[in-house]
Image (cartoon, rainbow, N blue to C red; front, top):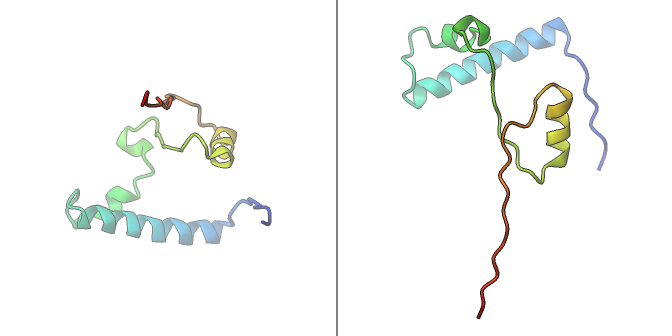
Length: 91
């Protein structure tokens, strides 16, 4: 498997990415019945801070070490850890 290289998007690439992502996110929320169609793209593109949101969370499976390392590298910290122990039956 080849390695993954991360690079910063150019301003043009970011503008295109943001535009398509905002449209997709807005459409998804309209389809799901969460938002009205009117104003959905404005709401989707509001970049969170303008809405008063000060933090975001994500879920990553514990066994996904590469993803966990990436998220930690960009500033996420573990806020919750779920642990599991298998109980063998006493047959």
